[in-house]
Image (cartoon, helix red, strand yellow):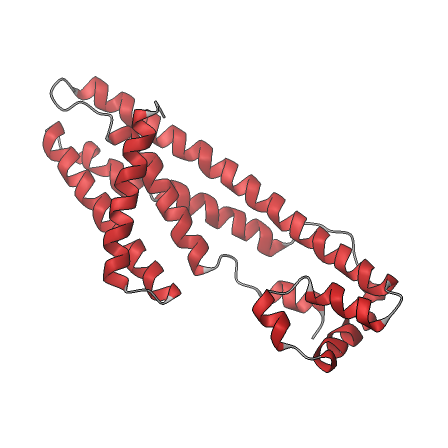
Length: 220
């Protein structure tokens, strides 16, 4: 199995990445809704808040997408550098060390010299077809997914303000939706990493509320 096939078979976004992007979008949106003063807020103030929340998350969705693409290029450049180190290695030990340096420590420690030699053999066979680092279709799809997740997480938070005239009720509904979304994200995160899902869900809500309050206090 060649390096190109391995790169093309990876998922656009890992589950942890999806959860992280949703939480990021939620926190950004909540910094706007949380700063809304219910006592003196009318429709003009609500409209200003909505424009700010949507505009901010849209901007950060685009920034996140660009950073994702830069990360993809950096990862491919690192792969090419590893390939170059492997091919220029003076001894098999140097080549194995170069390969192992690109693997997670636990995985690298589990591989024998014979295993690394098999990887070395595969890399040597595909060395002639090495191409300059560039963005692939999967990278653009990943960037689009990042944008959709960051911006999409804003929609459930702002919809109550569009459908409910009473600002106080709209804010309560919006906050309830945000808490529910953070609980779902926390539960999914706990399940993925092997923690107790419900405890992680509650912790995620507390962490999210703390970050929102901190951002608002710092003028964000």
